[in-house]
Length: 91
Length: 117
Image (cartoon, rainbow over all chains, first blue to last red; front, side, top):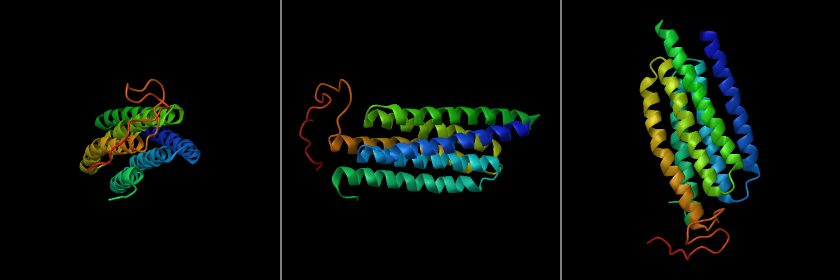
């Protein structure tokens, strides 16, 4: 049973990495700044998903701390960039 | 018996999370304009990762406190980020596809935007 679960985890990990590639390609060809900002936010979230999957694969909760830090920083980054786009000043 | 049950639950959560991530990124690729694209990426952030975290809370030893906090944090910040980006896009007059609301048909100039106080 555990082998099957590990196989599911590896499949999910590879799917997420492929999704990150697809999102990055679309981000690269983004038509305007907000589109790229959404791509940046999506890439942050997908990295978060990859980190959680790694913590699942290794059965260690260390990577959830990394995911927590990434979640906080990507949130602040997204909001600051959105405000910068709207008002041309960040804070 | 107990671990097998947990692993089945965790596997179901991982599969659901991956499904939502795929749907979210597909939406990010195919949606016509910025606002609907933002709607799609919100799903990845909220549903995709939260289901993976549910699996992580079930599976990883000693990690359930951090996992629950991260789930709560993601649910809160997902909405805030989406609102910030949407208001930024609206603020710099990015047109909406299709039949916008009465005040903002797609393509024509939006109403004048008075800067925030």
